Amino acid sequence: MASPLISVSNLRKTYGSGPSAFEALKGLDLDIIEGESLAIVGRSGSGKSTLMHLLALLDRPTAGTITLDGTDTSRLSARQLNRTRNSTFGFVFQQFFLNAQAGVLDNVTLPLKIAGVPRRERVARGMAALAQLELDDKAGNTANNLSGGQKQRVVIARALINRPRVIFADEPTGNLDTATGGVVEDILFDLNRRQGINLVVVTHDEDLASRCDRSIYLRDGLIAAYEEVAA
Ligand SMILES: Nc1ncnc2c1ncn2[C@@H]1O[C@H](COP(=O)(O)OP(=O)(O)OP(=O)(O)O)[C@@H](O)[C@H]1O
Image 1 (cartoon, rainbow, N blue to C red):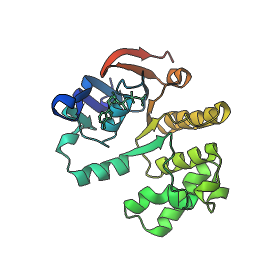
Image 2 (cartoon, rainbow, N blue to C red):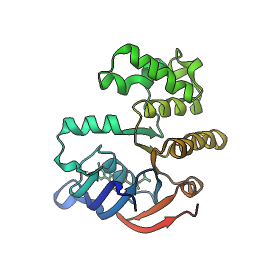
Image 3 (cartoon, rainbow, N blue to C red):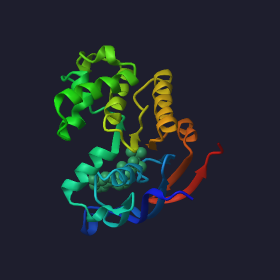
Image 4 (cartoon, protein in one colour):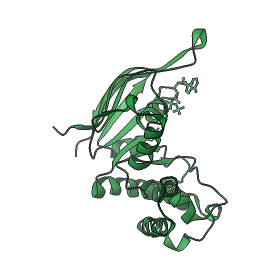
């Protein structure tokens, strides 16, 4: 069997301390295999976003380990974590997190700017990413002047700009109508199949979950069930 890209062992996350402490994750074990698509599902409050934030190295666990490509991430400094996140992961969140006043191209190339890539290369790679999402004609627009589906495609272009190994998507179609959401889903699964980019999707949408290779169901901070979807 292929070695896991991300391996999680006895993962725990407690928010707060003392009497108000809340154990959101209670000891999870999970391997994410290179190239797979994984849905994280479960009721509100079951720990889905907490798990995704930890997997994406946006937050640190209270206990347990997350190994990325053989590296124990607890050994990385804040700076190394930032660099690893920026170079390895792309993010597609429900609320877009676009700078509404900035241009589409500037939004898409922001991760490259953070990484110190020179402007000429930023523009070339940004335009290529926008072309991939059929948005190159919108490069000069401000992000505000786009439809919901176009905004989510800009977010995907930005997620792709660093050629990520994993895209983390939190309710990626939550703010979109069914048809537009379907287009965004198709783009994400196409990237997974054609480019081998891992997808980790938090969703309440059963249809979206069923398109993933595998789902895990969280209940009260633990994995209650695993489900493989037949190819
Ligand atoms: N910063 C925080 N401080 C205290 N408790 C928190 C914090 N973040 C999350 N929690 C609690 O941890 C639990 C899990 O939250 P989480 O956001 O991971 O759930 P979720 O499954 O993603 O929920 P939803 O589907 O509603 O987004 C919840 O009970 C929540 O109230």
